[in-house]
Image (cartoon, rainbow, N blue to C red; front, side):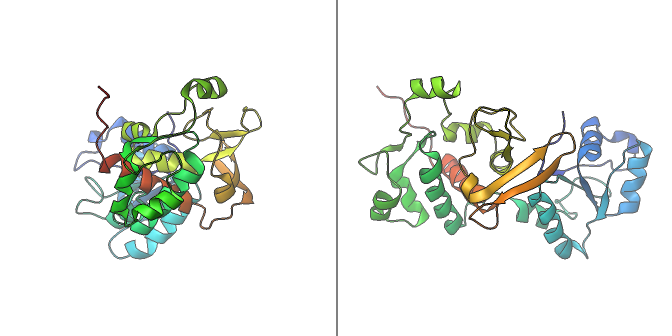
Length: 279
């Protein structure tokens, strides 16, 4: 199993005996595009011991602030990054936390991002996907008034106390797509914010599929790229892992839309418990 593009990995390394390294750690270090190491000389000894060839860059206390922006740019370009320290787990007491914090797709305290994500969801996703664990009225916790919710966000209900349901009939959607589009409150619980963010960022043009789109982390997914006008169009070569821009989107930076959408969907999932079954 290969690592997915645009992913950040925190890889624990042995404390003492190099033979304590796990098979999974070696696989990730071999497959990522970049290994950011606390001490490249120390990490190179581990990699050479197991015949792992990797592009090493340094990430330590005194260059961390400057290095984070460069590594974020690599992630946004679709490359995968692994962070390692001299021994143990990164981001605990060793370097790595600033990068993890900056790369996190979901910030539950960023109201502007959450509001933008809610708007993106109802305008681009609600036609196929619902968020039925959330009621419209709960969006007031994002600093929105009920009037704003009714005027700009509430397109599938008459009252703010109703769940956020899709308008697409389940039976028809299954015949159209081969499988009914899932409720995203369930999908977000089953996956993670990191996976959802990467998924939304890695659609690419594929003439072989029915929709003309494919996805780097969910190959042959039935869902078309609903956000392409915002994010733009890209091509992807699975063998080389190379991304090529075909056309720019109308929103910049390109990851703004998936970041906001992920924040909003994840917030909705965590902010409201599942609705009770009808009696």
